[in-house]
Image 1 (cartoon, rainbow, N blue to C red):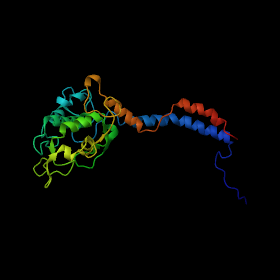
Image 2: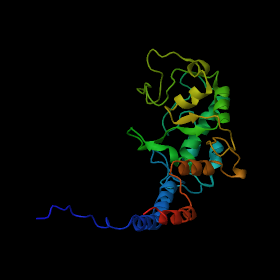
Image 3: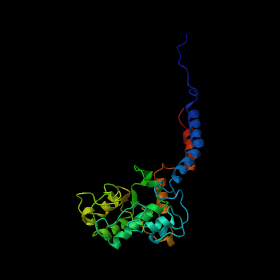
Image 4: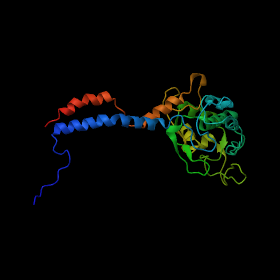
Length: 266
C-alpha cells in the first residue's frame, strides 16, 4: 500500500509557470478590484445623512434662506428647514441659544452657519457615522474644519455665555426646551472653551475636528465660502473618500512587472 501524500492540483507546475499563472490572475482580477474600490469611495460622496430633517437625496433648493443660501445649488435641506435654522428657538430641535442670556449676534451667526452646514451640506459623507439616539440614525464625527472657521467662531463667541461644554447631552428638558442642569454655572465661552479647538471639538461632542489646514487648501471643510466660486467642500470630500481607500496603482505598472515574474528562478 502506497504512503505517498496526495498532490495538490498544480503543485507539479514548474516555478516559472506557477509565477506566470499567479501574475495573470492578478491582472485579470485587478480591474474588478479597482472598480469595487471606486464604487466604495463614490458611495460617500454627494449624499444626505439619515437624520431628523434631512432630505433622502441632495438636489437644488432655489429658495434657501439667509446663511443657508450657500447650498442652494445642491442641498440636503429644504427651504423651510433653512428658515427654521435662523430662529432662536425653532421647531427643528427646540434648542435655545439664549439659555444663559441673549447670545450676541456676532456669535449666533456661527451657530446658524454650523446648523446650515449640518442640515444642508451633501459633502459630509466621509464622516457620517451611526448615531445612538432615538431621533436620528446617523450623525457626523471628526469633520475636519478649516482653522479660520474655528478660530473666528471662538473669537466672536468668547464673551458669549453658556453653562455646558457638550451641548448634545445633559440638558434639563422638562419645559420642552433646553435649560441649564441644576448646579451648572453660566460662564463666558472663553472659560468653558479655553481654545478654539476645544469649542469646535467639544460643543457637539466630536462632530468637528480642529485642523491647521486653511480655507482653499482642499483638505478641510469650510463652513463659509463664496458660492459664486463653487462649493470647495466637494473636492475636500473627494480627497478624504479616496484617502481612506488603498492605493490603486495603474495597470501599466503591474504589466511592467510581468516579465520579472516570468524570469523567476526555476
